Length: 331
Image 1 (cartoon, one colour):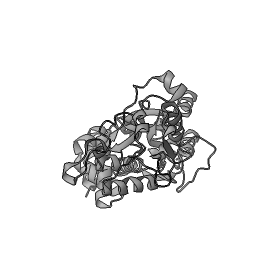
Image 2 (cartoon, helix red, strand yellow; image 1 turned 90 degrees about the horizontal axis):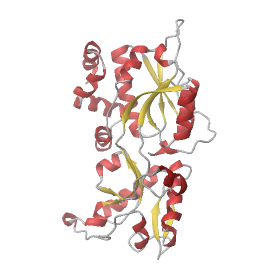
Image 3 (cartoon, rainbow, N blue to C red; image 1 turned 30 degrees about the vertical axis):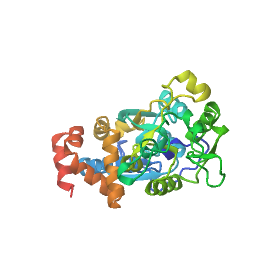
Image 4 (tube, rainbow, N blue to C red; image 1 turned 180 degrees about the vertical axis):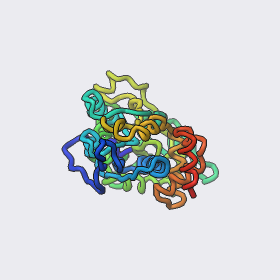
């Protein structure tokens, strides 16, 4: 995630579409959703848009920007719906917005996501089919990494290892920095920040296809964690006090919620009711992301595929007559 975990700083909202149009009675004709820049939110937006447009007759638009900017957009009412708010990654801002009454949590989209430092499973277990021997059979924890600089050798600094951090500017990068110091990783390993998520993925995919060692930050649900056999390295069980002091625990549990602007329940009560039922899982989300990756599909195409595959799930979110209208529109 994740671009979802950007530090909250002053940001200019990049608006790709107009704000929702309000009718004379306060209701809206166009519902605006937030796109903070990662694939899973785009898939969930597309699922929601299909249901909102075909089932309830509203127009929809998407506003794109950073996490900070799009969250502010919801607080200001320029954005109506946010289908993936990673609450703990933006805990302070999220709690402040809820307490101020600026926006409302309406459902938990999924809560079984994970994030941290991953290695390809063959690094630990080997892969007989590919002829790969275990490279670090005793590797279990993040702290263990400092024992294996030769396995994860930095190509630009022989003798030291390299851990791929999140891109600079992501909030999670600061957490990884703290772990470097707390676990003593900086004794033998270099802290490498890629220029982008795409650069980190490219580095991982190149290493994986070559059967080479790789270690770095990633999260689920993503097409990457769905497609490749990766192992999340262990850390002590999450403890809030320890996390706040040193970050020397696993990442905090992270409810990923659907949220709306405070006025939305009155502006579109029928859609608000539907969103209150919106619930998936990391596995369900990764299925759509895998379809995108394997078929070079758009989020809209993945959403339609997912809705055809999981008709029993999304039809439970809406009344029967609404579900029938939507089913007629699906390819």
